[in-house]
Amino acid sequence: MRILAVETSCDETAAAVVEDGVRVLSNVIATSKDAFARMGGVIPEEAARRQIECMTPVLEQALRGASVQPNDLDALAVTKGPGLLGSLLVGTTTMRVLAAVWRKPLIGVHHTQGHLDSVWLETEADSAPQFPVLALSASGGHTELRLRRSHTDGTLLGATRDDAAGEAFDKGASLLGLPYPGGPSIARAAEDGKMHAFEFPLPLKGEDTLDFSFSGLKTALKYTLRDMGERSVINDQQKANLAASYQHAICLHLRDRIEHALAQHPGIREVHIVGGVSANRHLRSLLQELCDRRGKSLRAPKRLQYCTDNAAMIGSAAFFLWKEKEAHAFEAFTTSATIS
Ligand code: KG4
Ligand code: ZN
Image 1: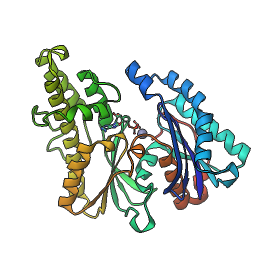
Image 2 (image 1 turned 90 degrees about the horizontal axis):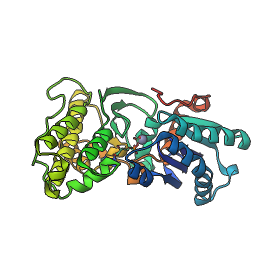
Image 3 (image 1 turned 135 degrees about the horizontal axis):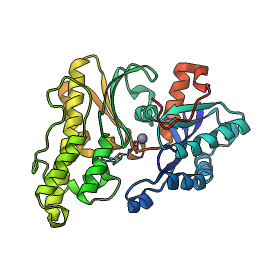
Image 4 (image 1 turned 45 degrees about the vertical axis):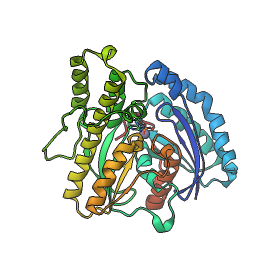
């Protein structure tokens, strides 16, 4: 089954052609990250304006890159939410029109469902992930831990009570005077730093919950900086040490909750990490060590471009939705900024 998928939930305009949920025939993305880095964050109306301009060329490039014509497609898919409403509407309106003109079924995909299925991209049948899976999805907008029994059946075990993990990176970077998005810039600064130079508290320590909380870490970083006499007087080595220690604290909290979840659900076969934060190398190595110790396999998306927002993951999720729910996958949907 060949699906043309579009994702426009934040500042990116992305389109991809994906076959049977795993083979990526093309994956195109236009982002305004550099422009928004200069502005210090995403300006929603500006993002939507840029997406209107990018949508047609990105779609054309995705079709050309996959060497397919509209006639070769079996279905269309698009992110229906959550995200920035203006941005989502650019994608969903475009795909609703194309579905009507090309007479193709349209599948509305939840953004997080896309991240969760990004792990399947470029896998072979004999090495496909095995349920039940413990999945951590951590991005700029959410941090959730799920027990997945299939692509469409799962239980939410825990979620953040305040900031998302990616948001903790973004806000921490802003405090340290590092550019947006904060995850990659903190990771880069941390390479020259010592992760034990500063001790940050482990959030929700000892609490019997699978929830997360990151706002205390951000506040701890703020007070540490204040006590050091603010940003202007700290040198590069201190900044690198702060970045490394702060990154380590975020990753330790994520590992701590995963360890707790594995103890509660011994039947889990694999641990998956998805979303922008899953690109973090320090997190991957901490979790690899945990999974080795527990005899579980750890999987993250095969490429870094599948960790952050992309359309290939939407094409994958749409396929598995269709595989498990058949015609229900094609039901009408509402575009929503706050879909649950
Ligand atoms: O999934 P994503 O592209 O967009 C959302 O759905 O939010 O995630 C973006 C988030 C940002 O907060 C960014 O700082 C974070 O993922 N991120 C990272 C890394 N790359 C991106 N966080 C930690 N380490 C990274 N290497
Ligand atoms: Zn995302």
